[in-house]
Length: 457
Image (tube, rainbow, N blue to C red; front, side, top):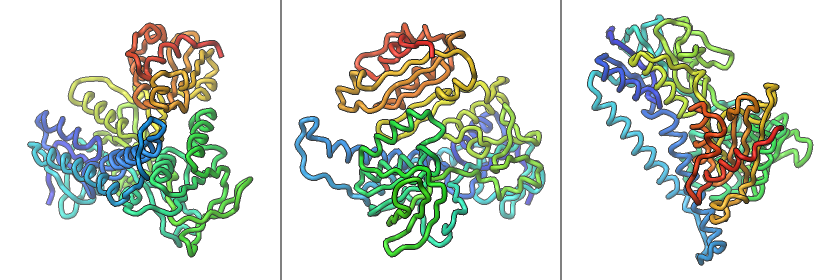
């Protein structure tokens, strides 16, 4: 049966339901198609459950340090079944909230099933054929599983399956030393597992500056996590104790045996079974849907939002994609991807808050720079909390006096970075931030001092 709508949205992740709400409120008849779980990665296998697990791990860590604060406790144990149940409840509550929102949305038809294009503006979902002049793809992504030797011979975990784990691994080996892998490394170490991180590159989170990578490695190794870098050839094999991970590293044992292996080597878009070729929608070499500055695809009347377009890969960038599309279509705006200032965080403890360029990227531009860096030991709030690991770093353009980028690796760094992010979004000179009067005692109160310390570099 053919059904005609004003708009069809494929995917009920971060951007899809919000866009459906705006379009239906504007009087459009909208179909929203979801093949799996409402809420997408963030609600079901990403932000919500992982940050819930991070919070449980932090509680265990602080409890073990209770004596440092003058608090007497007995032995600290972790009930992994209870930890998993807490994360599962937050997932289910969030998913139901989204489902209830959609169920109460007038002019919305919600369909469950796998959507595939039959033509540029015709999509099949089971027995239904949907036609619309406007189509929005919000199909998300999933964990990448590389075709490394032995991968099909062993059991492995991804970020999706590990969040449901109700037992504590004896030894968790994590393949991949970037954001996802490091968050799970620290949380499972704090839960009580032995943890080894294996990274092919010469250092952790290679997109960050070397001083950030080194500081994060020191933090993790300080908690007993083993780090193996320069693992240029990784291979997996069954072992009586679980999985053997073979390594070709410059130093260290050539084999690591773990009870469990987590693959955390990146993400891939869910674009390989949408029939994009039948619609003429262009993709890049990684499978991302190619979009322009306003998120339009190569086919008129079709847009791609969220992880599937390769233009952010975060929940907040997916939401911002929705905001751009909705503002342009419904509000007569002229918003573009190139206008946004990208910020993000790494949720180890202490967290890393990042915005704009790294120092390395700024130096590559060839423009004259101003640089400032302060250790967290100079932050009163960090001292009071006895959480003084890390540092703040700021880089600015010496001519325009605009901030180019910043990093706060330290307690509350994921929150404090927003003062800098907001200044960059408002396109304000460094003086506007230097003469602000922040609240004491906070981590943010050191930001004006950081700006005042900027020197040519």
